[in-house]
Amino acid sequence: MNLILLDPNSTLSHDQFALTVRQQTHISKVIKAKQGDVLRVGVLNGKIGEGIYQPPSEGRVGYIHSVNLFLSVPQPLPMILVMALPRPNMLKRTLQNITAMGVKELYLIHSAKVEKSYWQSPVLQTESIQQCLLEGLEQAKDTVMPTWSLIPRFRPFVEDQLPALLEGKVGLLAHPYLAKRCPIDVQKPCVLALGPEGGWNEFEVGKWHEAGMESVQLGERILKVETVVPVLLSRLYPA
Amino acid sequence: MNLILLDPNSTLSHDQFALTVRQQTHISKVIKAKQGDVLRVGVLNGKIGEGIYQPPSEGRVGYIHSVNLFLSVPQPLPMILVMALPRPNMLKRTLQNITAMGVKELYLIHSAKVEKSYWQSPVLQTESIQQCLLEGLEQAKDTVMPTWSLIPRFRPFVEDQLPALLEGKVGLLAHPYLAKRCPIDVQKPCVLALGPEGGWNEFEVGKWHEAGMESVQLGERILKVETVVPVLLSRLYPA
Image 1: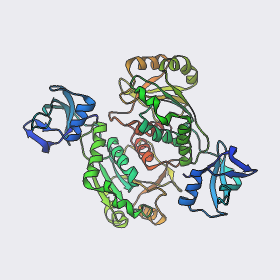
Image 2: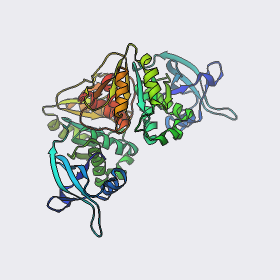
Image 3: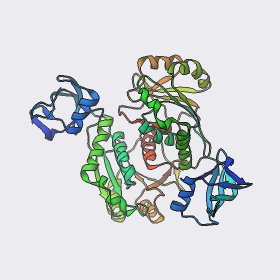
């Protein structure tokens, strides 16, 4: 947690932001802050700065007051990420990493090689996803919550929603077969579609291409989804 | 496991390679191969090709025979990675990822911000490290085991060993302060030194610089070690 993210809906009074249990634990156990210490804070979807720590006292939760916001958030990545729903044990880390790297628009989509059971994972509950995204923001000292959607049906998304998303953007399909080398430092907004373990099937690749996406590959090595994500994002948009 | 890696020290007879318990389990449960099936195999530190599967039978382990090796391994990364010993819970994944991405020479080094207890982690036992590296090779369809060393003392390494390692290479120190932007597609061999959570301390940075390493940074976002590794490697050597 490199940033205490304050929720504008949790103000105790003007300029006093209540801390969550997680934040309180982190401040007490890791930062070991005392009353009056100045902490690095950000306001959700707002700016970054400092605030003064007030520990919990009888009947009152800990809070931050005298917040002074003077820093902008890091640049977002100018891209939309469409990702085949990863295996639940990779999902949390992947959501955190995506957010830490600055993705602001995410679609988790079904694909023939995504096991149906993945869609039942408790990680997909709204609160759980929001928690992963929050942890990604805290890691990267960002405040801007990504938007996200679950897309359990492939075809209507690619046929009906994708064309509007692609407008004015480069469409890149991570697909290692018969593909050109993935561009480096693309410097344009993109829609990036990342397949499941085992890749998109032929029908799906056809549909992506029809919609205007171009296949790109990353070389001979097969990498795990959790590795491919930072590899691709840092290649397309090196910070 | 995208490749069955055969150990030349485990031949049952000429051209018959015994399978390990892990490989046998994967072949039976995931690949669900039957007697006579042709499987993608590689020989440790050798080439890649195919072999024929013989399931275990009474008193005899499963094995691969009639091995035909006709493919080269993927290109290694022309770099030496020196990394502050990561937190044990990140170490396994990091070792796998590093190997999957093609690092062939690795040093895990002490730094002021590495907790002493990390050096007691069971993951650092030779067998455990080798196992992580093996899993990285299996993931990336590579066969060439990286060499690795544990460096529990920072100073003698940087003063005495590093100059020889740096000969003919670019020396890059991942260090976000007062640093130039990390190069993209460096196209030269390098030594890359990656700090612990919280970074190298001032003394250490001074020592790295004295040895000829240059600080480079990756932008404002603070990323976890497990994310920084693929970000840096793919940026320096995009496949």
